Length: 248
Ligand code: NAI
Image 1 (cartoon, rainbow, N blue to C red):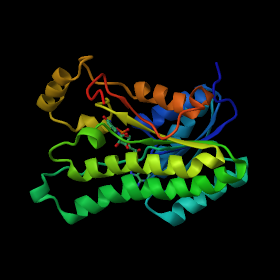
Image 2 (cartoon, rainbow, N blue to C red):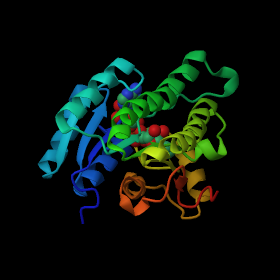
Image 3 (cartoon, rainbow, N blue to C red):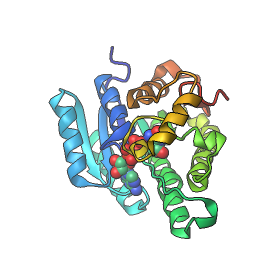
Image 4 (cartoon, rainbow, N blue to C red):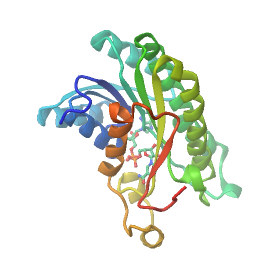
């Protein structure tokens, strides 16, 4: 089934991990996906993988924290495809440290990518979507933004901030028929979580009612729901995909 056929979907940070999985699923459901990431080689590789599968994919290199990069990328997408139907704000980083030891650079870097990047891309997409009077924006938050985590105060602040940002944009954009929702993944197997020590992974496994880490495709399935018409009457929501870890 092609649930988002002929839609134009920009996914930030999609050269790998959860972002790539979202791109792959969206492409399989008929969308043209735009891979937007930091490294040109990684972007080309990701686009090529999707094209080899027979999907429609295009790529742009840029840093979500840089307004001029995003201006160039979003303008190029709009010039080429005449519209932007879906934006997934997925690019995100961690720089973990206990608060006492946290350097200001660690705080600033995480705020810059996760929050400022989300703001910049949302604003650029909204300018296009408001004219078409349609669109779906999905912000990849985290369960850490709901429940906090020792050693991740910077990351938790950004993810909690993204949830509040989601609600505000949902209210602001609703009159233009643009929906904004957030997805809060729990512990998902990617390069980001591969950095975690084995004992931490094991302890989380015990805390998760479904007893295991999730897969990037588990997150992608929820994004697909928020991207398409199956969620046409849903906006401003945050839904966790976390094996039951939070149950908010
Ligand atoms: P990842 O580290 O595997 O991939 C992140 C991608 O974002 C990379 O391709 C990277 O190059 C790109 N990126 C980083 N900074 C960027 C920037 N300034 N501009 C453009 N692209 C940039 O991470 P993963 O695990 O796939 O995470 C994706 C999102 O999901 C993040 O927002 C993360 O916070 C969130 N998340 C991940 C969880 C997990 O368990 N892996 C759990 C909860 C949320």
